[in-house]
Image (cartoon, rainbow, N blue to C red):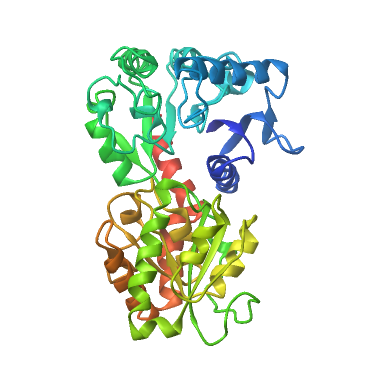
Amino acid sequence: MKVVIINKSDSVGGAAVVARRLLYALRRAGVDAKMLVMRASQPHGDEIEEYGNNLKGRFFFLAERAEIFARNGFSRKNLFKVSTARTGFDLSNHPDVVNADVIYLNWINQGALSLDCIDKICSTGKPVVWIMHDMWQLTGICHHAMECQAYRNSCGFCPQLQSGSNHDLSHEIFDIKRSLYSKYRNIHFVAVSHWLASRCSESALLQNRYVHVVPNAFPIERFSCKRRNGHPAFPADKIVAVMGAARLDDPIKGFDILIKATEALAKRPEAERIHMVLYGNIKDRSLIDRIAVSHSYLGPINGEEAIARIYQAADIVVSTSLYETLGGTLIEGAAAGCVPVTFGNSGQADVVEHLRSGYIAQYLNPESVADGIVWASQLPLSREMLHQSIAERFSADAIAQRYIALFKSFL
């Protein structure tokens, strides 16, 4: 079986890392898999090929951003929170696409592939597996709809464009996607969580399509659950709770809820035993000072090994995100033996089962988050059990086997 994975990059962004993990896991399982990337960060063997790191690729990227900029009243606000896929490379005649049995579309925005190119690829009749890392395939142009539900109809009045028109850019791209999806039954959509699949069932674009659920692959083998003491930023006599994100004060991450949860926690006797550790970028450093319990800030952390060392020296992993398509920090933390504390309104529910593999707090309730941290601080769960549960569901080799079974069913 020949599988070609198409992605924008081999390393930039979480989706690229996930695609690379899947590529090598498929190859370990005996699948003839290859990845085509618009831009490669480093030389690779035959398994990864670059197709568009040139002036043409730069033009496609800038042309898409320019249209969004113009249609948003020349405002940079939300410029990278929406995509149109009007521009991109045509790979329908690429030898690896022509020879593939299955074509796997990963993250193809920002000039990598256009919707017209995807139309041509689908016209071959081959199975096209399109993974959904966010909501873009079920909306007009946004990657995360937030509170907007216009995708249930046909988009328009897009809040991320500050639009006052029902026939704005979001509506135009929605109609293009509707036409594409209705033409081809060989497009197989895969969501990374049941929550994301449930959003598809509400979308006018995908409500009549079956959406498979296969989570992202994680390098579970790099996360030992053996407790490691002696991290320089962690007090040796404290229960350590960690929250990390690419950007901590991104509104989606709910940092204000974490602050209020620590304020609630500070009023309890258990607070003396708990130390909060934060990592990731943050625009407003003064927010760190508002954490009401003992805490430290590590700044941005790059690399899986560095992140694994943090979790190995910790006891709890916390996420107060308003929603997550899956919940990568929870998976990584639990793989290292940390007890997860989070909300259960979105993809996190695929990771954590309340009181069995973590704590599900009441949505948007800081007091409930504090309850969860106290519960987790009592170390009610085995680190080995947490690691094994995550490995069985999210390791790259386990995910590769699920995809192999899926590919075979399409063939």
